[in-house]
Length: 92
Image 1: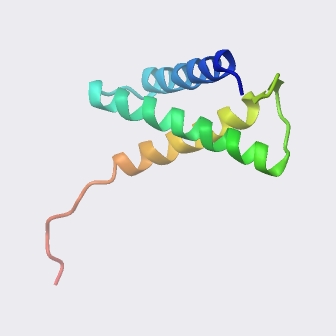
Image 2 (image 1 turned 180 degrees about the vertical axis):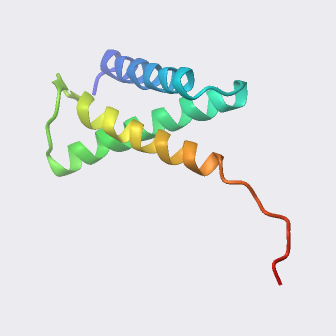
């Protein structure tokens, strides 16, 4: 992928993370978490689509569909894991 296409992919991933933050809310640390997870998920989705040869909403060499699906999966999983509370009670 070329540098402009990589920057466009980064822009799309960061936009998805920011929109998820607007929908779910939270503070600054949660925004950083969502942005990071979105970029990692987009890269994972893009890599998976390149590896398997899948094509969904392509834009040149960039597969935006698979990238956005990967981003949403990572965001949902990260949001779910970040809301798990640690129980300090001993049940024994």
